Length: 257
Image (tube, rainbow, N blue to C red; front, side, top):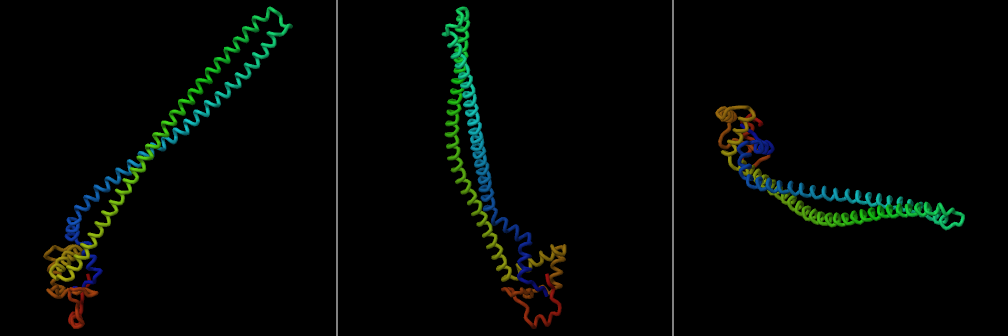
């Protein structure tokens, strides 16, 4: 006599290749849809990361722009100090130019030096104006970058919403597939408990796999265990008949799977 517990029956159901094949056929369509949905989810993750990278690059450019502006202001300040020094020299030269003690022969030379110093100031002021223009251009670029960043953030928010939707869809397909698996296995279990012939096939296949028998040997082996039309016992009892006390007394040896 072959005695099977419910746990052993579940193990046979989960490990049976024919049952697995039937399950795969049953959920094949859902698995394909889930795969397509997961591909969309992966694509969305890529889009989101791509947008985040672009935003991060713009943030880095902001810092670079700030550094450039600060450098321009620093250079303008240094040039302003140079102008102050030159103006002081011009002031000193002007005093010499108007002083009665200054020889007349030196006046032309002093005037020439004043003109040269004034030209230096003009050149320095041109440099300052160029730096101010640079600052203005950088500020305009910064405004453009801010606008671009704002657009990217809007796109990012939209793609993140789409990502959450596709992620939820994948989760729903996982739940659907898992539910179908559970229903399939439970239905299979209930069916085998109520149908001896189908249970005999599963047990026969299980013996064949576990003991590496041929199908003929498996059938012969089940017969040697008194594998008859009404002599499989399920413990705890299911719909397949459980051995009575009298049966157990008549059958001294019960083979466990």
